Image 1 (cartoon, one colour):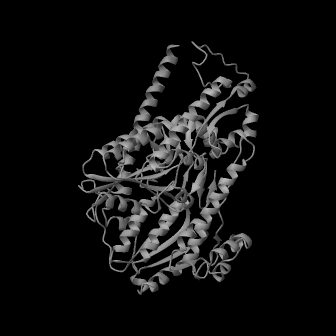
Image 2: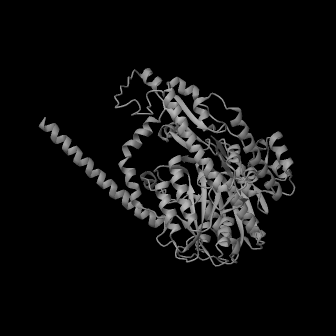
Image 3: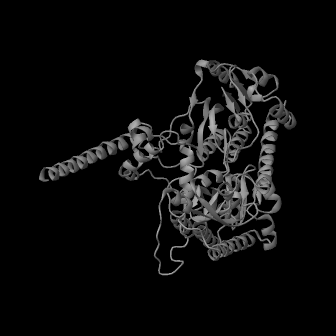
Length: 602
């Protein structure tokens, strides 16, 4: 017994010692990685010689805005410390390249981008604005997906690899209805909602899509695809919108050869990438040997745009991106962090106006309410307040937007979804299958309501329905007040329906189709700042090495999860199921529509 005690004590000591050493090693790697990969002095201006070409590489995910480095121990040990691309930086760099006399052209390299149509439309519009300077854009791609090509089509010269493919397709997606799966597990879902089109609950309660859900998606996809093909046709003069639709629908363009793509006017030249330096050099009137490329980060070093935190004539651009949650970390909208930031901006005399950049499908009702109230407080100061909508600003995302003085949306934004639902799982059937018999003792019948192990009674369901309806009435009243509409009209265009931006403009949910730049220019004009104003982006970004400590402490849990997902289990399905059980019972969220070029899923 004594020997076992000493062995256990020794093993605990050794384990603790190894953990401390591991922490020291990882902390050192963090510091070295940050210095080497990110640089200590990011404000130093890099030299850009005359006649340079800025290279914009389209690959992977494009975030809304630059985010702190994800300091997890796996990426540290692999030496993979990098920031993902983001729309704000790309648009800023393109704008600087337009004004910079040393930049002669942009070389756009398409290597497989995954981003929402609205994100890529904003990027494409920035490139079209660049062309107004008289400078050229040359694009190149191997296998170009719809997203790659949509941006590439803005170029003066579109080149493609002779062995490449143009994967240009319309918009569509497949929704997985899970009721049959949950029936086998013995899990049912009790639903309370307001809104005929509030279809986020359908995959859990139905085996197929309802007609209202199908109708709204038909309208949404049809409207977005029309904008996309019309924009491509406007840049590719040899193609009409109708011709594009015909080829995509009938000729299955992704199965055709590169020669077919060139013959039909989608691309201008078929060349291997090794020839592109000569083509770029010729386009700007230089010899290949004199060609100089600069990166997006080099161009960003030429400007301090978005960092005017000490300016006394400041237009603040505040980002609200992700699902609205009560708590939560990066990639979500945490009201506990966002609300104090809004209040601080409201009380800062240097801040003359606000643009809220919203890219959110909604989420928790409570968090949406807190953010909405803080924005109302900002408005009460008399400072102008505008909203710029990104990929989507729907449900809770529209809740926080609708009170703005003016709402701008990208032509490919998804918005609306004015509605609320409650989704309460009941695992009684599962516990019976497993031979588990829950026993409950309460001081009163409703002490543990709702209870995961028992179905709700009719009285409880009625109480939940009233709760949701009261929340919907609050939502409708907020929209009516913010948009200066009659509540009856809001209820007609509400019902949980998502709307494409052009239709949203027609029915009064937004005020204008435009970019974030259009929004902050409007705010500056409304604040009577003329041209004497600066833009500052919030929240400010800080990389904190201590963010990685929870990762170390959670190592055992991560390994357990990894082991549990081995075999026949699909990671995304498991992640989706975990999300369902962790979410709040009552939500203001649009249906799970993730529309991305290259990946369209629900």
